[in-house]
Length: 105
Image (cartoon, rainbow, N blue to C red; front, side, top):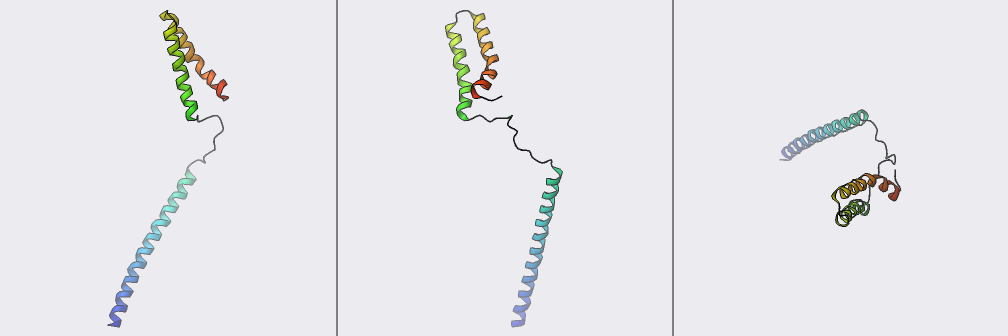
């Protein structure tokens, strides 16, 4: 009886060792693949400062202020040609105002 238990335990341990070795091989393969991919990819550079992510308040202001100005022009200016011209000026001046007001270029 003891010999039978020992044999079964040895078989279980052998199966566990094989599974452990297989897992170790897959982990090693995955790590080799990751290191190769890291070597092939160009290194990531940090932000240079030229690209800025606006805050939610700034984004809201950049959308709401021109819309309010365009609606004010639309309702206060009687002539349609002048309305369209002033709205076009608002749209053309908006990037410059964004840079000046938010202090970024």
